[in-house]
Image (cartoon, rainbow, N blue to C red; front, side, top):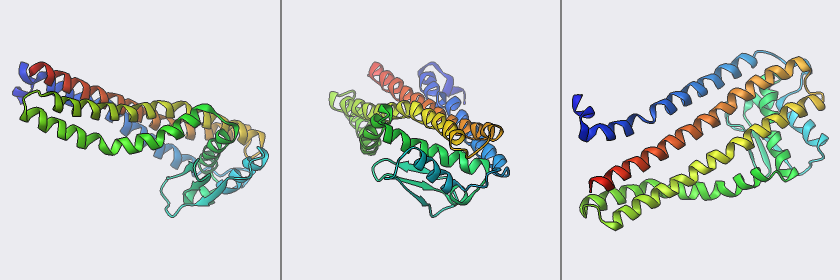
Length: 246
């Protein structure tokens, strides 16, 4: 164990543990989402509206008629809005549920649909960047692995380092995507809370529960950004150390 903290390995050891705070944060955030959702899933809305009905009520109130809502094929929380197909997909619990958790999540996804309809710029940027990020992410590890192999084979050759840094740049696009996602998600939640009240889907007391559900969910996006930044930093430090050693 002591060898990991020897001078020649210390920097690499630090790179290995740099992700620990972010990973712990991510696990705590994920656990908090499940705990908060389960807690308010036991609290039924006084209005008795299902998640699907809440979606439709908000869309009608906002004059949006080109969005479809469908029930997913799983009970897992995979609720999402696809701006390309203009479809809101709700998990079984949310689609059929009348709990505070169900209507809060349903309203959040509808908030994304409202963003699209209102031309919310961060939403447009994220949508455009999503496809680029997903495409480039497929090449991150192949580029890095090829770069490391070439770097070892040619002892610090330019070609190897080029592959490495291109891989890092591609990963950086994913980090940028995570960064842009934050304001989009927070804005969708804020819209959701206001729309739930303005459309009469919940009363003032119930909106507090919805806010807690959405706030805990938002922390998962913060955690994703933190992990992505730390991972990017770890890559950069690793390659800088290799460049120095070579």
